[in-house]
Image: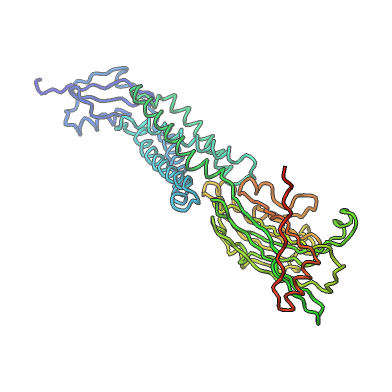
Length: 476
């Protein structure tokens, strides 16, 4: 009897698993009498020996293997399904996000995906042998993460169209809520023991570090607005008396004076002749468009902080009669979109349509008689936004007429853009999401007689007279 080993079988836990101890040492858990006999043979305990039963004898085996394994299978499947998109988003954003904050977020999502894989492995142990003490805690954390991911997806979907991301968000919330209820019922978190002072210290330090990082690397760059400057200036002029034409050189420029790089989606400038009418109302109504065009090339040019694009345009004015105009005005306008919030995935410059090709492609709802059109796919600043918003395209129309303008729209590729002359020329949603901005420079004006005078002086080989300085204000 001295070699008889003491075998103790504990009471069933919440799932029906009974812990087995031999000589006071835990050797594993069993779900049935058959598994108990197999464990005892493996441990070298002779069959038929005395067994001490706690919480029920050899007939108490509440486990339902098929139900337990089915539940565990769906939990593991849900955790793996959650980790897959997280891995994809995390890998893409950690290397390709347009901002530093986006790359940090991508790395964080990658870590969360790893935690979901650990939770899936822990779920196998939790619904099988329970060899790891904290397997239930790991599964609980994984399910909570899945619930938070589902809620986040649905919150981000507010105001968006119904996409596959919406279905995924709903499925995650429903699945994780059911599993979370079961885990709480089975007291999956009972093995977690964290001292209160350590928990408080970790939470406080994490919150402070996260708040500082979010403010300095995410919030501040996000609220920093682009500072784009554009304008037009009159330079020299000359006259061709034989052809009865006046040539005026206009200097046009656009400069990024801020800290945010932008794409120049479109640019336009116009030269107008102001008639010598007696009332301002007449001048506004009779203002004549002499010339208009684009001045930023190539199309879709990236304007980095501190960079400037300039062009000298030579404008032709026919029949230079001194009584024809009172003044000549010049003004420029550019349409920019933030490069830190989106990226052109197609070749924007090569998507330009004009002339007969554009006219043949027009359909109902398109702007009437446009000069040109651009349309290309774009990518958001992070992969999570690509998943939430779905594919997006930017469409740019250039319109002529008496009031040249540019229309910019950002929308899904399958959405047909309908031109409405009553609406603003810029897409309001794109303004909020991507920092789409219309920048109009101040108007440059030159008296028409002065242009003719300079042109006459240049024709004789003399230096054009300088523009007189403005009259200083009277002393107080």
